[in-house]
Length: 195
Image (cartoon, rainbow, N blue to C red):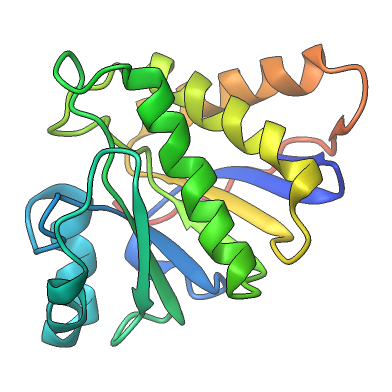
């Protein structure tokens, strides 16, 4: 699914965050120490190689809602933006902290003149954030930030499973249909990545 928000393209696809060759930056669902772990963080560090952990070490620790940026190393992307999402039921206010991840990631992208950013569904894995609630926070935050973006032209949500994709598409469709201006539906475009 793809929509235009204030002249920016926002899309949801199913796929692998480490295989987004056409995106300048990918976002890592990081842990506080910015080290390899499970889920997205593990996949990104494996694909990027040992140099990523070396670059991350002096930037840690980070707090929930915070974002830092590094090079992409062996990834096909120039940059990795690392965000620490909230642990649901522990880090409060969870919705504000999760929204801060997306705002801070986009702010860093703007500062570096990055034109395209791919996000995973932050905090929805081991951190336990309910998928639909997280999708609402993420997509609402990104659509609200879109009018302020100058460099970033394309934002992609890369979802691992079919359920995550369908939830994000449903939330995005509601946002696109419910906004009187600035959001226009360009039709649905489904792209299937590899699981």
